[in-house]
Image (cartoon, rainbow, N blue to C red):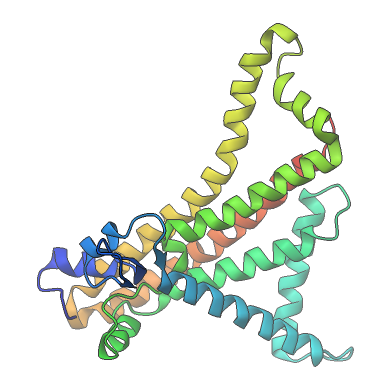
Length: 272
């Protein structure tokens, strides 16, 4: 691939996002080197991660809408049967883990599972295919797995965190939520600073653990695919073997992110 002459450069090239932002000279545009991307600072955007996540989200909505519009009550087709199995699987897990009443939880769980699974599944595409096509179009960098971008995983986890705070206050009230943070695990005024420290850390660890768990597992999987791609023509059988195993990782990470979201929101609905 262009711009990658050594194994180190090859790996670094594949791990670099297509970044758009403001250059140090004040001009806006795409970064053509890793240094330019780092110089753009916090307000730059990873265009490839955003584009692929949005496209996959639209694909998910379009696919399920297509099936819903053509659903039959008799013998379902293969696609309808697959969608129904996924929905039933999500519904059973929501019923087992979430004991309050909230019409948002099941659709949210379905969206998280399918969307994260689709983003993870981009890892199964050979690493040089899409970046190679992009380089022919003059695009220097392209990462095709959104969940290997810490910005994407943190964005999703922070959304879950906002929902946890919202429903904690809605169900328990501001006072109830404050008491939960200050009077647990020791119900005594003297222990309030200690309780606040413990509960504050536990609360803030939820979005951090959600984001880092998904990012870390998918980033490691992508790195192995990149290393496999470096062996040349032998990469196809090795890619197939690792891809078969990686399907389990892809599914498991989507399931874990969904289940932790359900559990966190279930805790937010419980009054102590």
